[in-house]
Image (cartoon, rainbow, N blue to C red; front, side, top):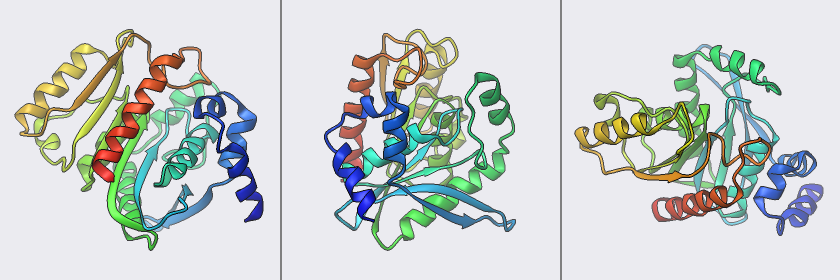
Length: 254
């Protein structure tokens, strides 16, 4: 307990971008989280990493990892959310596997069972809402692979806010009609996959579904521009996106 407190104190003044760019600092921040577990309907356990704020009860944020898996960088972001006053749970959709090469990331992403992932996310949302140190307010956030699953999670469960970083947003109108809260998206003009055509279709379908216009932002950057550990990192745009994310969640989660 004291070791964690000391680590948190030492990292409190370090910018998130600096932590994410340093494997050593990211590992230190990740070490402050607790491993939590629940059981799915088939009896299989799933695990996540939880960071709790000092002031409780608090609103919650569910974090969904990139195609790399639940690594120290994503746990570090959860720790940052806890510093901002949220109960932050970083889920694991890869069963403990973490990729270090694009080839492995693609392999692990391809192995994800959609139905099982949906149950996992719905179960964690329920778990967070029922946690003794949280209130009923909850938001989801994800990057890349996790960006699309942030949207899926919010379609499958009642949440108060959804944040998507360059994730697949192609969804039919009936699914989008199930959304209960506002959506914020961060996209990159140089992204060849999550592109203007896809996002425009999403905005059109949201309108047809009778949902409020999503809060969409475009950046003169490439896919994964918010990840300091990658080669496409854009510090200025990443910081702007993070500031907008914090404002959006504060507005909708309190």
